[in-house]
Image (cartoon, rainbow, N blue to C red; front, side, top):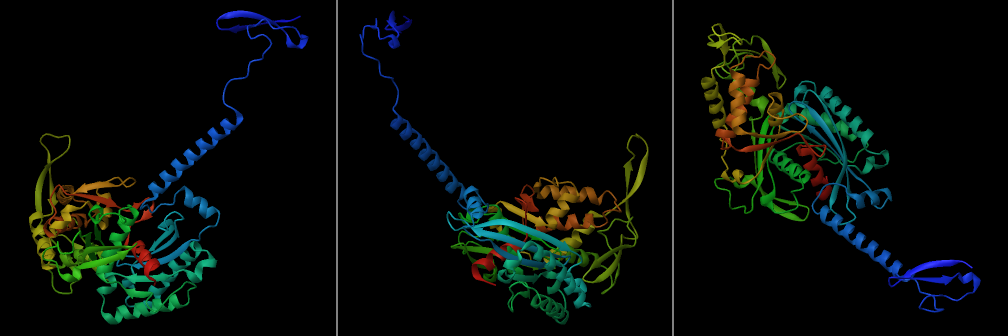
Length: 480
């Protein structure tokens, strides 16, 4: 007989092993205790409840996090893997004044709210710009053909015929004589006609400056996930190209903007929204066009050997190409010299030729004022993004990290300009002029304050910042 000890209500009892059929010594006599705890059915209900709650939280969080985002989330990734929706492709070529760039994009519509999600992109650029081939239009068209071959590698062959293809030439062609611009456009049209992508009669054209500004603004705010909310939460966009510059921002009320021409206020219909937007493009205020005009000041008309107060006197015979013309540039013959203490010495000084900032500043200020730049006070109500040559020059003088970007104040541009102008550098012969131009454009042109911050952008979430994405979105919604 085997004894088994049990504890019940604080007392020890003994009972006989049930296998021996003997009596129990517990107070419960011969009755056996039922196991305590939830039943099998209760456990199943509990498990199902936990799963339902978890799924509810997951779907709620996912849907809320999708609101207004351009990114592909978990549910859309699953839907893509299951083939529940197809990709939408668009190919845009930006024929700029300093180079041509292809942006091939893939999108899909979200299974949650049908919003457009950016899936992937290809970005390739070639130099020089299309306008540089003004006298050789066939060669210019061949450069565009190179970009189309790259786009064909990105877009699946099965989607070629359904993929819209468009090219827009910007300030470089706008500045050419009409007959030369038309010759280039016609040669590119021949290349497009032979491509496998979907094209129409309007696929190749010279872009209006206002569209350039509007599409850039759409790009920045789409990638920043600010396009789907209140207009006052959007970012203003400053784009500095080679031949022109654009300033664009939303208006809560189209009547708010004072002194603006009605031609500068546009109603943008995109993603089921109607937003009044101010934009103005200044042809000739791109950094290369302005550089050429500023260097030419004080020189004979049509001269290609140029002397300028905005070039350091140590610069001699530097070649600058713009609009298919080569210019030889140097500083003034009568340089200003300053005494600069030699590092590590208390008494030794060296003579340094410098740019006369006051004279250079006056030349640039006069040139910008001649363009009748408007100072829109409403611009100060917004966070401001700046890209293209604004970004490039900020990188080149160390104002922002090339890998993580950052913000720059107008005063920082001003300080950097003065520093560069007082320190000769044959490796960056035009940096003094370029930074002075940027500073005066922002301060005297747009009326920004020294403490105004500009968010410098090259890309957002790995996607290139340019007007091309904005145009692609417009084509998807409104057709080619």
